[in-house]
Image (cartoon, rainbow, N blue to C red; front, side, top):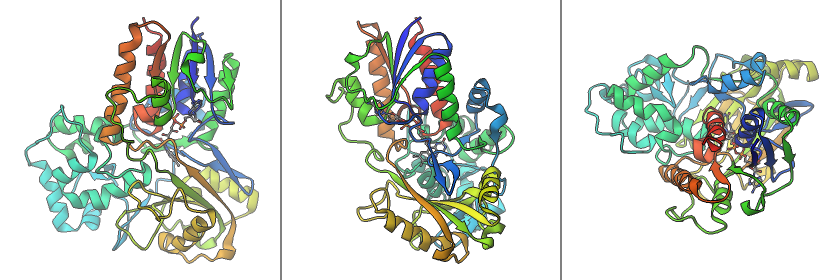
Length: 461
Ligand SMILES: Cc1cc2nc3c(=O)[nH]c(=O)nc-3n(C[C@H](O)[C@H](O)[C@H](O)COP(=O)(O)OP(=O)(O)OC[C@H]3O[C@@H](n4cnc5c(N)ncnc54)[C@H](O)[C@@H]3O)c2cc1C
């Protein structure tokens, strides 16, 4: 039995802890805050509990579903309303094209793509099928660079940026393609075309919806992990911020925290050699989420499907995304109806892009400014006029961690830290490894398998 210490009780730390504890190792999990889960947490509005942070996981690989099955949560897995989301552009609002990956179309000549790009830009995008490939495996370019080169900048602006800014909190020209979707670049090189790569990934993905969640929200995964860890005998230390790895009594340490803490912890306070001194884009930014509980029979028709992603070029709406939570997840609609009666709706608006300038509405804005903007944006986002008296309840939640930006620089820093730690493995002292969004890439589909691998590898001979 090996004694392992895990720093950080977000999904990465919890997953690594579970992997080790179930293999019979002694686990001490240290979490600086008063609760586990990090960027996965619940929030309650008028007695209805929904996710305050992450609310779903990508199904492009079976990794998360397999993990949930091993935890005994398979029966709780749910799919969203297949209506899908919409896209708000400066000049139009349209349903999101049906067959894409990160907004990149599999068929640039499809009608729903032409409706958004226009015939000329769609023809430019289709040039991807025949143009020579100038990218190579040795490069780690930004998603926006690759898409602009293969399909033209209009595809980045109108289809990709709304998704990367709304979902990843990243500018597509600052988001490494390897971070956004690890297989996309490799498949593009193999296929000789970005569109063919998207089509091939779509074909290879498990049937059904691109994302799934758990009945009761992703936050129920945290409670399940916590109770299984306790049953397995793991020691969970809440309100315990680890400042110095040297104070831990452990044979192996896994650090699963955000970038600034990782840097400080593994280097004893100084900047590790070889890392860029500048902070990665996104490290200092955050998002603010305003969740509105409305009594609005006009919304029973789900006017914008499951929600809306707003292109950064849109000036008349300040939110970057809106999720119609009760349209997206049936259990939420049922809980609202049960608790409050019919025609109650939950909508979540997010504010704050990495590209925002000082003075933009976002992470640092006051609750009242954010609520005011959410109410003002709502008619444009939903096509329905909603008045202040229809507001039953609201919450404002801010997140600064959990979205590391994923720039090429951040990816190479992450890789460098991992190599540095691997090189130290032969030296005296406990083995140290790192995991979490900053190393694996944002999103549970990348974080969970990475945390499991990290836990398995740290004890390997
Ligand atoms: C608003 C929002 C919505 C999102 N939506 C989705 C989604 O729908 N689907 C998806 O896949 N992903 C989503 N994400 C991304 C995903 O939630 C995060 O990438 C993921 O939860 C990060 O997990 P983590 O364990 O790496 O880090 P975190 O969740 O940030 O956890 C790190 C933990 O370490 C603790 N810690 C830090 N320093 C120390 C220390 N020195 N000692 C002890 N503890 C420490 C922190 O308190 C924290 O609890 C979303 C993120 C946000 C913010």
